[in-house]
Length: 231
Image 1 (cartoon, rainbow, N blue to C red):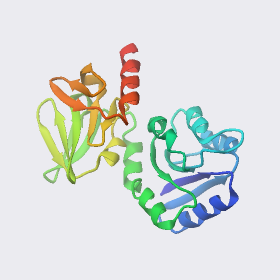
Image 2 (image 1 turned 120 degrees about the vertical axis):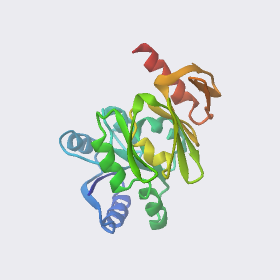
Image 3 (image 1 turned 90 degrees about the vertical axis):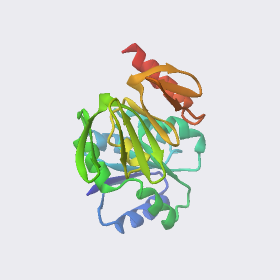
């Protein structure tokens, strides 16, 4: 069961999302409010897996709410303000819904956040391994041994110190199973930032492998590398 929160100061917008959520079998609405402070207080004492969050609200806007949370849940923004896109990657934002939200677009967004993936994320908190199935057999891969991951059609190539694994998965879903040391660098790549030996504005050198960095992810990649260098 995915526990849902809706934070939006527009009553009509909340009602629309409440109605849509009620139609999803594994969704449980635990809070729907137009008061950002009410959500923050609620989230400190209750589990919330996914929130539908408006950006423009009185008192606190959506990005300020996310910045205030140590471990924010998955987020679907209900807004037309795309200028927040780059910053939002820090906070688990998986999609943007343009108001008024249509049911078809709502369904597309929630398909990116399946119950199984959220459950796996919780199970992997504090874990040092990635659990996959390779050739039908379960395999555990140490995070420290992963160099980078590349999207390959409907599959992913996981490059490690010893070999490459080919699995049927998406970059979006596998991101939820990785530690914070992994970062999307490109629409087709995720890199283990702890294995980076050189960084430029267009690529990372991960050991002896060149991993591209696109303009979309450049700022957050370089910022995260700076933080790691100080640890």
